[in-house]
Length: 625
Image (cartoon, rainbow, N blue to C red; front, side):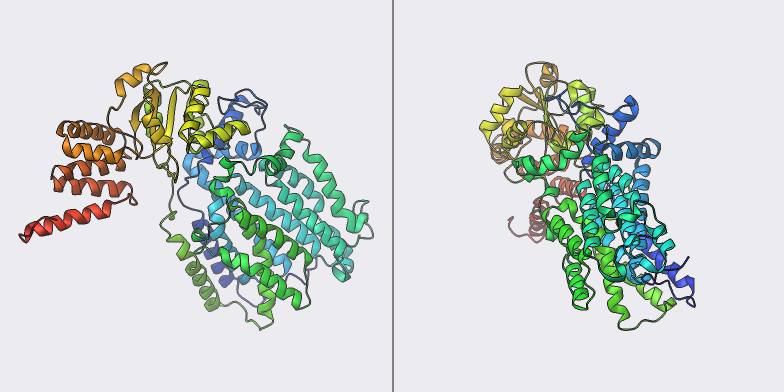
């Protein structure tokens, strides 16, 4: 079979060794970029849903994830991804999750490399672009549905670009062989079952269909003389397949409800206060995306496309894809990954065209080594970020791991209230037990009214009381880290109908003093130590004056410190008590302990400096500060 002139191979006289070296370094760079501890809260609900399907051998069609709307009709979106992911966990645990990440990432990037080569990009250019793309993609690589979608998007581009870059009328047999556009129908069906981003898959196909209608000259779509009836449709082929794919998408376990989900979100829910507060649904945070090279894609892709147009090689498909993915990626951090995946092969092609105009030499060992070192150098700023650094395992510091152990050990049950951030963990940890279901899950299940009341309860005391009056919670599982304006811990501290029974750095657990958890409240309730910050100042001042209160506070802090390995808060406050009692060596040890557990703990360095200054003053005979 002949090779398309638009996809030149590496020079025949060049050794394969340099190419293998560069490819090996690129693979290691891409794999390293997505190798860091998984901290995504969605993971636990994905695993819980996958476990539910595998154990029950059926897809749930009612809401079984939260208790306020339990039993209501429901659609389990991303069901295909969850069903595929769970066996990786059940067989390999954490290693299985990382195998999933590596396999999906490398598969997607390998296909994208093939796309770039098919489009005419030089091998070195495409490799460097993909290494850069992986630095942005790493944010979306934590065993999420997008990891599967990345392969689907790459395959879609490969099918469409293979078709678009064929020889056309010169070789009808090769033209037909390269037109795999019929495969787009099952591909888009799988995408619909895997993630609500399937609308991008249909949009990409629509853009290429429009490109067919706009095409002129030798690259215009022509039908092979001996082709099938579908091939005879010529420029209308993609439009016909697009209509077929849209119709077949409705043939799924949930019918129209699954297909209409993203449209329902866009039209009715995207402006809800709770959903607008979710980080990944917000516009790009540039402070988090300077080291990874995202600006190069946001600025570089349209510039390269325009330069190509100025040189007389206008590509309407590229311009439309660039506009769509750039707008989506900037509007929502959730879609940044799709932006770089789509951009990489086009940018590689455009850069290669510019580079060839200035002449190039075969890839030898020196050029390969230089390019390999450049790949590593480009990655180092992102790899050396404080968070997330390369590593292996699960980062569960922000999840109520030990609090869940307490709940199970002491039989805490009933109607819960929780941060949605913890909802997935609760479902995973408690196997979706009816009396331990979350109030709200990581996907914010429930009615718009429930979501609005839930969101308001964190900021307005009256809204919190109204929500509790409506649902009469039996226990509360709240995050210890309070965001700006979040007063839920303080509201709970002030509510005398609840007792604080467990506290660590991740979570605080409250149970109602009356009801099913009364015994737990009586046995484990903290009397003076608050979980929130509003009362800490007053407690500290009172401890300075009242030695009996100080003794009780110290005892409760020691209990909190002993109850969990994640006890930086307790150690930090114990250091304050020690400083009040002039036990500065003990205070220093406690502060260093807190700092080791939570390096970003507030005011630790300042207090250590005060102790150091005091010790220095004592050694020189000066007065104490």
